[in-house]
Amino acid sequence: MMRAVPGSRAWYAAIQRESELRWQAMERREQWEEENERIRGRYRTPRSDRPRCGARCRSGKPCQAPAVWDYGHNRPRNGRCRMHGGLSTGAKTEEGRRRSREGAKRGALVSADRRRERRAGQEQGPV
Ligand SMILES: [Zn+2]
Image (cartoon, rainbow, N blue to C red; front, side, top):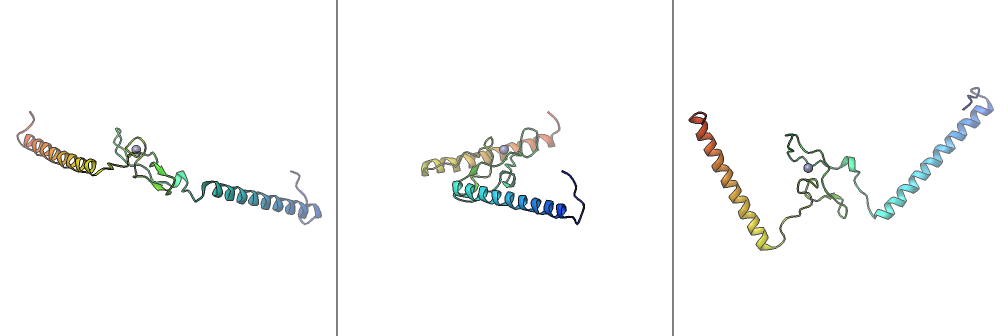
């Protein structure tokens, strides 16, 4: 764009035009946002602001994928990504819940046993 002499009539006109264009852009953006709001019904947290999964990956680092999002409530479903159980909402029936609890208890006992065994093995030296 040609640079007008500061203070000249053309310079003021250019500034005015620029300002008008900016206002128009802002109005368009507002309309667009309102339209989006209407379509969605409610505010959605932007993807970049959603919490990460954080599960331990095979690389040993925390998973960086975003948690599975519950759009109806605008919150993470259970905090994990789709690869790390984020789609699971857990057992529904009382029977299922009971089995899940027992499995967790058994798993905890097994891993405690393993830890104890490992420790005993280390005290005796390498096998
Ligand atoms: Zn994950």
